Image 1 (tube, rainbow, N blue to C red):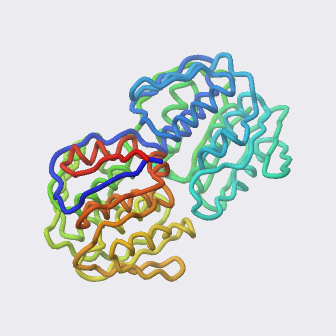
Image 2 (tube, one colour; image 1 turned 180 degrees about the vertical axis):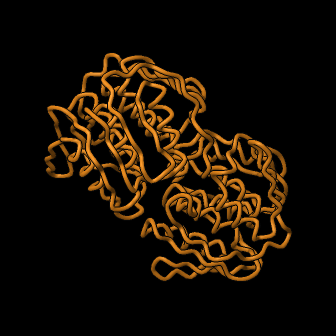
Length: 418
């Protein structure tokens, strides 16, 4: 079991290249199953979730490999429509393979997904979308099986703008007969990135990034080359790290329009943040201030994934910052571990009040989930002494090499082998 060791109290200086977006690359990898050719995907981070996705593709009969930040997938010989439990349980977003497998084979057999335990993530919206396109479902003992003699276009209206369900509906609708209209669709940048990838394979999708996505079904998909967008949550984490530790950093390979809610929040601490092309320059305030209430909402609102690291950034801010979590009911699980570092966080239901303290002290803590683990890293950088973070397999699901990146910024971080 590896442990991240961080010796805090050092200001950050330097620059780092932000990896490709985890939340883009996973649906893109699943969608590559539609192609009867070779897809080359650039700017792909080396994550445990990517490894799990490639394992699923190989199980389905694809040839898939990662060379540095490039993934090459040949789906010509894909032949299986089942994904066993041991592969599905490796990541929370594995249900994204449902639409792709159904579109390719008109059948799919999957178990329910695994990953971080952030509370219920029902897949009923995914199933209803597939049913609208003509699939029949059967669920037994945590497994789902579906089939469709043919997929036919439909009007799909989501009761809430689910990112995963929108992506699954888009992917499946690409192979349906006719034109599908998806309303109340999620608007995240990663969905627009998926649209660009699908269109590069020969699909006809438009509207991604708005609440209405229109998909005209096509009969064949070819290989393509695609570059994944930057990871806005990784960028938000490193911006938060600068506020927590102090200093001045540059983030390269960013998209400022994807980070406006986070940038606005961190500027309230007194940080000077300048966005120039794909570079973000941040100079942290020596005496950060509390921020206005952060309320997580679907994009373009404040991202739930960015909430934990931003919370960690204001643990020593003057005043009280309030966080309201509207997406996941268990998203504040990192609060208890941050309090063990000396933070003053009071949680009532979906509201957390963070009153700034003068000092944080490093101790052993445990990452309970991906973004909660990132929050512990951010807090450790601003703490005095040594912090040991266990269960870092959660962090590796979303950060290519967080220790390397932090050391590039002048932090004192390392991996202990246990």
